Image 1 (cartoon, rainbow over the protein chains, first blue to last red):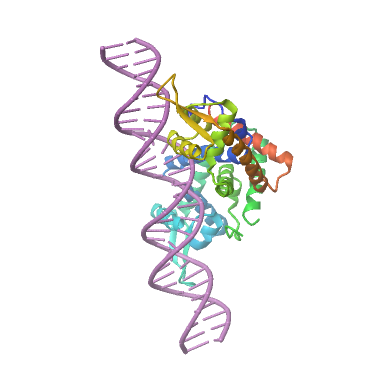
Image 2 (image 1 turned 180 degrees about the vertical axis):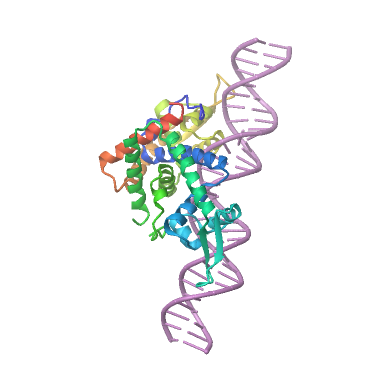
Length: 151
Length: 151
DNA sequence: TATGAACGTTGGCCATGCCAACGTTCGATT
DNA sequence: AATCGAACGTTGGCATGGCCAACGTTCATA
């Protein structure tokens, strides 16, 4: 329907994990992007709000490290989140190089909304997999990821 | 070591398949890109050579569809492959809109070389997984991919 | 014979990941 | 106390990759 994949991909590719991962990631990005776009947000917003909710107020650099987002992007994303009222940015009085980013109640609520949106995306993405297979897939991926990002 | 991931990612992200896939795909791309770059090639080259070897001579549009590569990119990649002597491009006498791309013996040999290069990449990428888990992961991904690309 | 589609090709847009640079501020060394 | 290096927020730039638009050529259908 979409990629006009009437023709089948070469077996070499279909048997190569790296190729599979890349292509699945493409479809994934499309789905996630679409869902967040419909919700008036960007992917990063969810990551940042999650980090703030789980670990409390943090500097932008800490958020960058925790979410694996580039510092430059954190700047822009926080701008947007501030404007949306999901987050507050204040200078850190203890260390004046930093900003302290704090989750607002509205932001927490928005996060919960995104949870539902994202759950829908996972469902669509992993439609052909059973519940057990989904956690299996997640486990395998998590182990690969941990191995490649300093544990 | 690399992403300075001293801080852990939020659990919300680490439990979300779409996030895991995207991040694993990032690492994957880095690895694959590096390996092919060291071999003096691009990722697409492998896909195109694979298709040609498995299905025989084809038009650029057919290659595009089979490999999921945009037509514009096929143009550039075929240019490079022609220059490298891996492929021959000739006008299709039966349908003068098309070109016929044919794999040369040198191209077939290069493909076999890439097979080894890529095998090394898979090994590095999936290092923490057992052999059984690797095929398990590939199976799950293939099913997801098939579901999202018209079977 | 005319209309629409496929093809190769060029060029552009946008999202992302990475890196460089700057001025400010802090910490540690001297 | 002064200095040097590092961290921080911020701006900007580069390269990749997926996607789409447009053009002229060629074919196939009506």
